[in-house]
View (tube, rainbow, N blue to C red):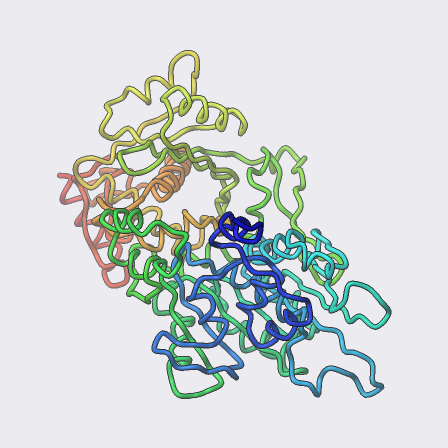
Length: 547
C-alpha cells in the first residue's frame, strides 16, 4: 500500500481537508459554514448552517434579512453558532460597501458585539469565539490581542501583519440598566443572547440596540430558548411572514448529532410537556402561571453578580462604571454593626430524580440570594457537611430543611453532634403545607421581595413549575421556598401579625394569595378574593372557623 493510501486509511472521518489560504478566503466570505471548516477547524451541523444561511425550517431563504430570530432547544449549540458568526463577520467586516471608508478615505472601525441581560451570559458566546480563534492554527495568526476584563474584547485583523491590515473588535456587553452601557456606540453586527429572558428586551431593542446599528446599516441576531409567548415570540412571528427584512428559524436538539438522541428521548418521558416543547423542540408554549415568567425575570433585573457567588458574610455588591461604559460588580464590606446582615439557609433534600440543593438568602428587604450549592449522587455525610459549611459561613445562621418522606432523621442529624445547627424541619406532606409554602414564595416573587441572579436551573424551574409537579425538577424551587419561609418565620416571631375576632380572641395569622390562615395550621384556612372582599369580613369568617 502506498504512503498516500496508508494516510487516507488512517485519516479520521471528521478531519477537514486543508485548502490554500486564497481559496479559503473566497469560500468563506458568503458562507459561514465554509469559514468554520477552513479557518476554525470545526464542522457545524446542518441546523447551524441553515441558520447562518438564513434558511427557514420550510426551506425558504431570506439571505438579505436585517433582523433574525433563532428559537432553539438546549444543547443545540447556539453559543457556538453565535461565536463563529461573530468571528466571521469581524474577519470579513460584513457590512454594505459604502460604509467601509469614511469621507477621508480611512477604513471605518468595525465592531461586532454579543449582548445579554448579564455579562455572565454575554460571555458565553464571546468565550466560544475566543476559544475558536486562539486554538485554530490557521486563524490564530489573525488574532491581534485579547482583553478579558473589565471590558472583554477580541481584536482581529484581515492579515497576519503589515501596515495595511484592518482591525475589528468583538465585544461582550450587558443590557443591564436598560442597556445604558451601549449608548453612544456604533456596531456593525450584534448578537442578542437569550433575548427571550430579558424582561425589558422589547424596549431595549427599540430604544437602544436598533439605534446602535443605524449608522452603518448593521444587522441584529436574536438567539434564545423560548420563554413563553412574550415579546420574543412576537418578534419571531415577524420572521415567519413574507417580509424579507425579518427572518426566523427554530432549532431542535435532534439537529445536533453530538447529542445522544436515545438519551434525550428517555429523559423526555420524565419531563413536563411544556418544558419538552420549548427546550427540546424550540417551540413556544403557554407557560405555567404559578410563577409567571415576567415576575420571575423582574427578580433578576440588574442582578448581575452571579460570577461573584458566593457573596461572603456581611459583604454586599456595588456597581461602578469603568472605561468604555462597562458596568463592574465589586464586593464591599458592610462595616457598620447596625447594618450587618442576617442569613438563612433553605435545603431541599434529594429524591429519586433530583439533587440536594441549598440556597442562602440574605435577609432584606428585599431578600437576596448570596450562595447556593447542588449535590447529586452523594452520601448523607457529604450533604450534612455541605449544609454545615454553608450555615457556618454565614454566622451559624438558621437552616430550614425539607423533612418530608424520611421522618426526622436528616433533621436530627443536623441538630446533633457533630453538626449542632440551628435547624428546623418542614414537611411538605399532608394538608396544604406545601401549597402554603409555595404561595409564600409566589407572593415574594410577585412583589419582587426576593432577588437572585439569572441562575439557569433556578429560573427554568420557577417558570416551568406547575402545581402537579411529580414529573418536574423542583429542587431549586423548593430550596428557595424553604429559605423564604425561614425568613417569614423569623419575622413573624419578631413582629407577629395578629387579628382579633369579634368576641375578643387574638390569633396569629398569615396572609397568602388565596386567603388568611392561622400560623402553623393547615386546616383553618379561609379562602377569599384578595381584591374583592372587605378585610373585616375576612377576619369575621376566620374567627368563626376558629370557634
